[in-house]
Length: 276
Image (cartoon, rainbow, N blue to C red; front, side, top):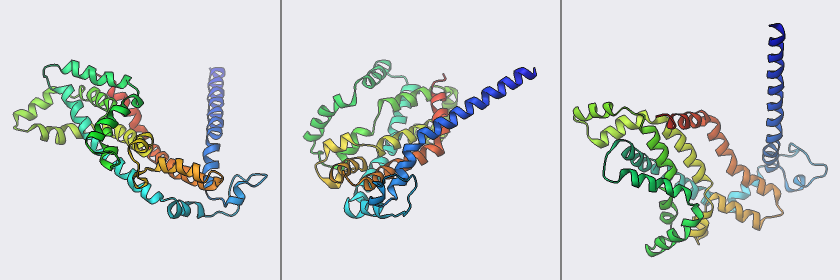
């Protein structure tokens, strides 16, 4: 027994050490990026390099907003994030409809929705662009936002989760005189908090990192997002590594903070969505 106990302790210690070592190795580029964003330009290229800044400065971050219009890019990105989060309710309503309502062709329509997940997003960009162009929505914020309001994957996850909600609960609410919108917002939404959390996080990450579609649909720099601004930064200030690291850190840190606080909901949401 003692030998087995010692063996398990040794294995756990070895696994823990390997995980710590792997975590440190993975974190080095991130730590280097954050550290370099606070270094003056001369120190970034210093040989031998320094892991932490000897003369920390906020100059790189100030230049992002003073010289590169990152304030405009941030505003546009936040607008896209806001409307993408609001779009979750459309996806939730669609998932709720597929899960709890019976109508002609429901299964076929749902399979068509699932089939769209097999088509790469890049393939649909040209027809979507042509449609928006006919509607006069190119080079507008509406043209950037509208295609992202509905997502097949999100509808699928909501549908999978809402099939687990007892139908008897909904029937009891209807017998009490509750309307469909009241049932959805007062009954379904509170129950579906885990899946709303996971979809909210994934939607935030996708909207925050939006790059290709805003670059295609917008010709005006005042409509660019942070990702597009970061690519412009790499082109115009290719030799200013401190400024590039500041831009990259400004993009990455909010996502890491959001993920750190809500990562448990991602696992919980995916787990509960797969249970019927």
